[in-house]
Length: 275
Image (tube, rainbow, N blue to C red; front, side, top):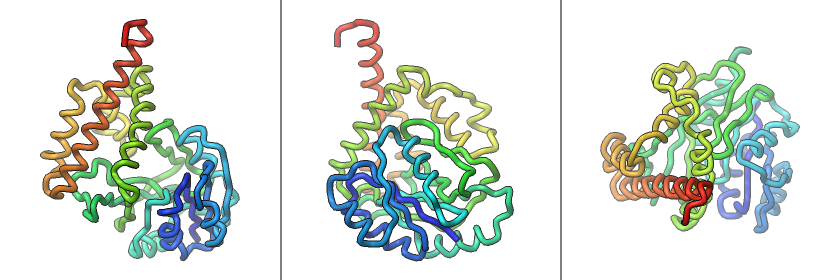
């Protein structure tokens, strides 16, 4: 009833565990973007249907994945460091079996982990639409992409796990260094703050529309890195997650700092000012 799409790039460490977690599916697709490690061999050995595509953006890569020839009407979209829990598997199968035609997506909770600790309080955006009806969804935004669903979205209660730091903090920082460059470009162009509507942020019917508007407003705030750290630590309660929560909040505050520094550098460069 449910096909699986896994996006990969050099995922020899995490892919085996991800494939084990979706072994219940009769239709598993791996879309790879040029791995140079054992990712491709692992996918083939485990019986996954392997496709390759040159990476040209996060949203476009996911959209290309949604166009693969899936056997089933519903698609679970995962990264290699994510694992659906047994409870979620049961709930998803029951949900799609009884879903009316107007339902095209299901939102579910993602549990991020650091040092073996579930970041229950620190995690900023715990809900993601990952179960999609084929032909009724597409992704937008090149970084931290957003899925647009043609139809109703319903909520599931069980969670999937995200091993965000499985490759270590050095890898996480390298990845977010790339992300921060792309975010800075969106900020410098004004695209990131487009749609900064307080009404949308508070009252939009769609959860993701609210999140996009909230993020656009946040990008216009002064002292964003400090605000983000304080918000994560004391409003969200990252401090309640112990050392892992404090580290997670600090890493995200630094990430926000990188975005702002790079944004200012871009603006100075475009204005012909010395760097």
